[in-house]
Image 1 (tube, rainbow, N blue to C red):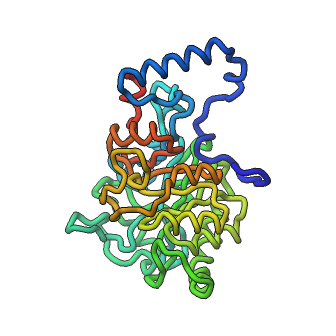
Image 2: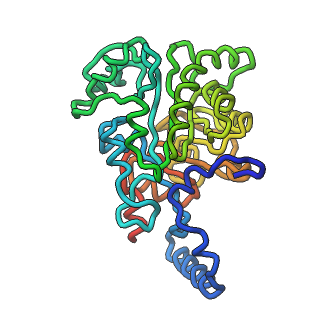
Image 3: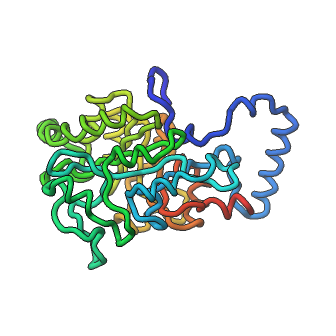
Length: 336
């Protein structure tokens, strides 16, 4: 975290081991670790970072690949286990959830604009129909998620279910209008207009978050969401979600002095995934995102991981957080 800021370290600090335990380590131990790392390099394998420096695990929608996404049941299960790489069964260091308003202005945890929307002809996310922000709260809360028996929850219900030791990454989705600009850097006039759309949701969500002791991080693809959070709750860390431009994402991070950036994992150089068009088409600008962000004091948390191989390679590259659909993705590499 940069000097002069009173914001908390929110991701890596959530699962970190006590730093004081390392202060008394002598030169002999350091030399031994250096030798072991050199031996591993000589065997042709990438040197793994020391375990206490492994990236934080952020449960994407409460580990959406394993549990019904953005539900109370999902976040309860995602939070189970110990914190940090030394835990016998590692839980999430932070849980990522999505929010938007209902027609009544209540803040619910849900990802899509529509209750039944899914791309590619897949099964609808819930058994209900309608645009979330045009649907009364009671109907939204009755919608069952993926036939799981879990229903769409209020933000307060989800926050109640997450232990205070686990951080919460609140991703701002749609504020209640289709007239918003996705993943774009806005000019002053457009930013002012969109901030008016975002402000009611921001004020309600930040008032709810203030009632809890969890570490909070707000992320969004929408610049106006970050702008209103900075105005309403300047103490809360923020992170732009990047999409098709590294430079635009970094410019937005600088504009709001963001504590982190959240790029797709194919924006990280020196990994097998760089410029792979899984999320958006490369080639990216000639910018080493990880190096620049770290030089500027920002953490880099990558989305969305589904395999141990992705987790291993990105951990070795030096990212700070892995936003993952499944728990335990670092377990294989750590145990080898």
